[in-house]
Image (cartoon, rainbow, N blue to C red; front, side, top):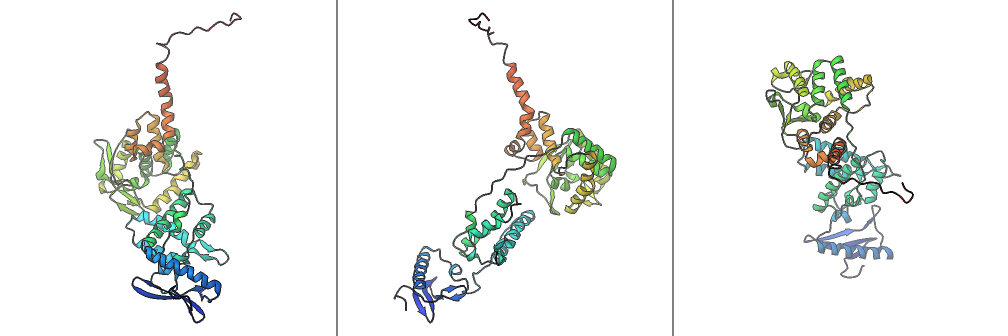
Length: 396
């Protein structure tokens, strides 16, 4: 038998721990490799350390039964995959956000925990999950960008934080995963000449509605979801503006923008001309400005546009490929190169000024450097004294 009062007992050919938890007397066998631990001298010393640790954690309110005795019953014992399902059900989030979470969940569930056994991480119980498992999973995917890794780690960190709060586990191993370094790619806009060539080619080879949409896109800088969601009641041709208030994301129509703030976009002559031409095609419906097959643009339609219209157009023109979204970047840089103020440009694009300056600092500098230096140079020379060169001792 174990020492009296220690909570460690020899029970047959096994070691049993005895303790009180949540007002209930518990007696649990210590297990090793799913078998009862033998009462050897070394094992008994180990059992006394565990018993002391359990008493301390009960006293501090951090003890979790499943962490020490995962075979004590299904209640409170979760695999990582099962816990992800539980956690996701608690999230009141947008459809697009949930889709991103599911990508992260799939990554962790499919990652290999033990290479020799080819055991997926999702099959591990939470109490067996270690930091080394998470780091190994990340190391197995060197193809992932730093941003993607950080997004995936954020998902498992949030899920395990809830497990800690629910006292399923006492510590979240994902909190110790270091943040991956990554640099946000610079915008890659089309030049004005490239934009004009693309618009002209669209008008030459494709139906007018495609041509109209591309020209309007280049000269309004809307997001893809905003192009899809734009409705005629929010277009004011008389006052030359449109209101961005609705979007279509993942085939779901939403009455709010990405920033949850509606904005007015002033229509320049090029955008106004394109939308005026479009009026005869869709305005009578009173619904979406841009339609394909008599329906709003959805995800599969954008993929078809990219494959059947956009990519062939760039190939014909010999223009380096950039995705259609870069039409937005192109309008931003056009405005800056024309000397328009960053505050106005930011409002047109639906950015905060800080985000706009951070994103387009390169073009902001390029547009303003010569102008600012010219202003400084104009202050020089007129009021400065003329300095005559000093003659040297050699007479010159």
